[in-house]
Length: 459
Image 1 (cartoon, rainbow, N blue to C red):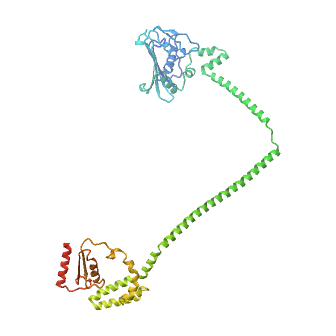
Image 2: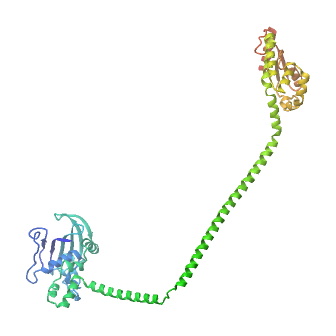
Image 3: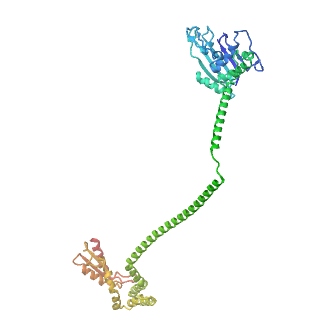
């Protein structure tokens, strides 16, 4: 730290306000200067003002052995260590102020204010007021830092990196201590030097170091004594122990090998168990598949039979087409029938035989082959009048009387079966035929068809 300025007023023998600026000439460039004057002129008070502003105390109130009280004009007695005793008698207020540069390189101003009640010389002393500001190079206040006795004292110690005792032994020597040092003998000078510099701590450290060294020597001697009581192992004993260690290591290696083999066996056992579980699942799935396969046997037989007669589909369509053409054009119909016979000749068995029965109109043999399947085809109620429910509305049947695919007699048989269950109207007309034919339109047929349609719409 570096002190820049000292200011104060009404402190001890200094009645008027004073200011010392170390940052201005002629003190700025002075390497060394002295504070001189007659006794009681206030030389020590200037030093006291520095300590009061910075640390809220000064050497003369903390001198060793000072315990007497001092009477105050207010009637109370002040302790000898009370810093307010520096307030000049007859003054109602006073202060000490120091500008300095802290260890952070910034400028600060510390101040201690002393005052009596209502500023009267006989008023009771009030509590001290402490303030700390940061200032610029011109001495103007930039910002407040702390206020209050304890906060300011702690912050000053932090900014100066010196406690009060360290400050008064390094930067400021109290009055009388240096003179005593010069006049004392060698022993007393050593004691004063320790007192001034605080070197007494090194004496304490020296004693503690000696004690710790003695304790360490004693502990070392005890350990050496204990070591001496421990017998040294013979070579034979050491060899026997080494042999036991080697045998133990060999046994350990064998156990590790057996453990590894057991682990491999356990893994194989787990794999085998999993394989058995999967085999059981596969067997169960196979049995289910076989049951399903057996249940589908009738379906397979049906599909096999259908596969055998599937080639008939195209041939039968050709036969029906030839029949429709033949009703309108005999020559074209015969050509179509010839093509159907050629197709039938190329069919595999039994499709070729069945198609031959159809082309030859051999109903005897064809009926014998189809008769076993009639019951299956006629099973659904929708294909049987007797099994179907009774109609709830009138029934209209319209059929071409020259139909060669489904004979018109089928509609007549159906009409006979339905009569008595519901009103039935049947019309067989030549106007209903295949698209390949172009029948002659007769007036009577047209009238009957129109009447049939009108009756259907009216119902």
